[in-house]
Structure formats: structure tokens, C-alpha cells
Length: 304
Image (tube, rainbow, N blue to C red):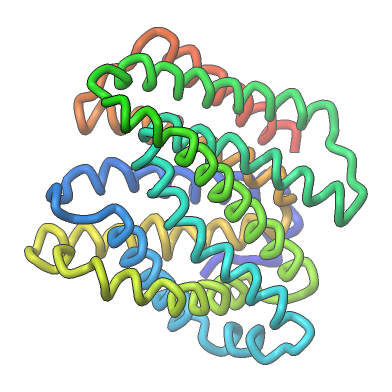
């Protein structure tokens, strides 16, 4: 059991929990790369979200029900749950239309910007200079990493595929906003006194119900072998269940803008895993991007 009260009093420890969550999310791509070609990315995202959401709810039933029964929070919780459901659909579709590199950088890179805008609008909070510098370094690193992937993967894309890229970019922006919004709203509910496990358990249960039709329509290939079942099981238990436990506790002492920036560690770890496990290669531009991400995240953690 994660000690939420102690984390709330230790911002740096909260930041470390956010980094652990981001690192777990980073294993998604490498794990999914072992799935057969006939398995839809949308089905994979829906299945992992649904199973992980059920785990979050079952392990926090009492606190989740308490959150669901609080009238003042129902509308906010419902809108946040809608954002949770939109995120995987928009994100995976963005990568499919614009390419993995572009879809990832638009989604992950835009989230901290959207989160900052939300904090300015709702809290009139100006970002600190140190935060801005660290964020700029991390976002620039993600951009370099993405451009490196674009340069190595653009060849072979047809004219029709290139024409779909703007729609993919738009979907990436939608995914980035959805992620920033449900992170922001989760933080608000937690700071209002709601337990983090209950907030995520309730929010993801509602999102799971919304995603169920996608799984029913496209999920049959996921259950064709022990390998596919095992991979989906890991995605649900690791990047979904465990990651959001850490993320929820970390949000008790971390602002939503800082949290979304800290999770830029995800493309850093994902790239390292792709090199070590999958055998992909990275150009010098990509290595420079990794360094900038690491510098930005480190400054943010040390700066508290």
C-alpha cells in the first residue's frame, strides 16, 4: 500500500512516483510489438484499459464508490472519464495515420502545454522560470527524438499515407488535451480530499464502460493464443493498474503541468527499450533528444 499522506508531504518523492508511472507506460510499445499483425491497436488499447480499470476499481471499491456517490463531483468525474476513454482511441489512431514518431511527439509534447493552460485558466497560476526551462528542454528532446524517427521511417510511405498525416496530427492534439485534462481533473479531485485510488478507480470504471463496445467489436484476435492473452495481461497489470496507482499518489504533491512534463520520461525509456529489446537503431539526433529529455526531467525533480 502506497503511503499517500507521506507522499503528500514530500514533493520530490511524489515526482519519483510520477517517473515510475511514466517508465511503466513506456513499456507499452515494446510489449505490443510482440503482438500479431492482425491485432488492432485500438483493441489492444481498449482491452488493457478495461482490464486495468477493473483492477483499479476492484482494489479500491469502497473509496471508488464514495467518489461516485459524491454529487458535487459526478459531473467533473464524468467529463474526466470521457477524456480517459477518448485518449487511447485518439492516440492509437494518431500513430496509425501520422506515423508512430509524429503521433507520439504531438500527443506527449502537447500535453504539458495544455496542462499549463488549464492551470492558468482555472488557478491564474503563472509557471515558474525553472519549470519553463526544464519543460522546454524535455519537449525539445521529444521533438528531436521524433524527427529522428521521422527521418528514418518516412521512406516507403505512400502519397495517400502522407495525406492522412494532418488528420493524425489533429488526433494527436486531441489525445494530448484528453491526457492533460484528466490529469488536471484528477489532481483537482485529489486535492479536494478524495483518495487517489478512489478517483482513478471510479474514473477508469466509467471509461471502461465507454470503451467496451470497441473491445467487443475488434477484440477477438486478442484471445487467439496464450501469447496475446499474456501481453494484454501485462499491459493491464503494469502500464495501466500499477502505473496509475503510482501516478495517483504522485499527483497528491505534484501539479498537473509538472506531472505531464515528468511523464516525458516515457519516450526516453521507450526508446531505450526499443534499442535494447527490439533491436532498433537511433541516429545522433535521437541521442541528443534523449539527453535533453533526461536533463529537463532531472532539473524538474531536483528543483522540487
